[in-house]
Length: 86
Image (cartoon, rainbow, N blue to C red; front, side):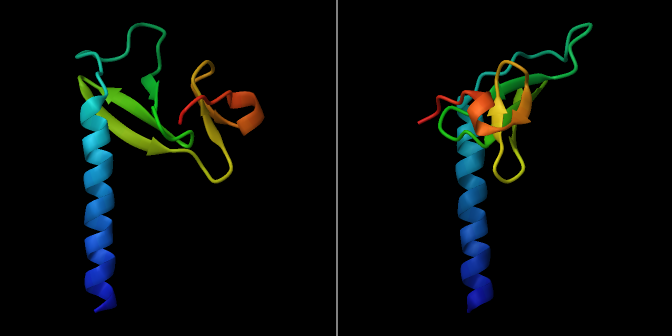
């Protein structure tokens, strides 16, 4: 029974992340010269961000206690990241 509940919860969480990724508009291109990757901050979660891959948004998560810094495009300490997600 616990396994069924765990699997159901996992499927629901994946569905939420997939739905959120569908709302992000990524450019339909790869990184430009000198650009390592196209990274977009998550609109509601400071610990998440999106990596764009030819128009597809992939949800990524920063390590524990770090937030995504949209200026430096790295996971950073919360006081340096300046996250404004709600």
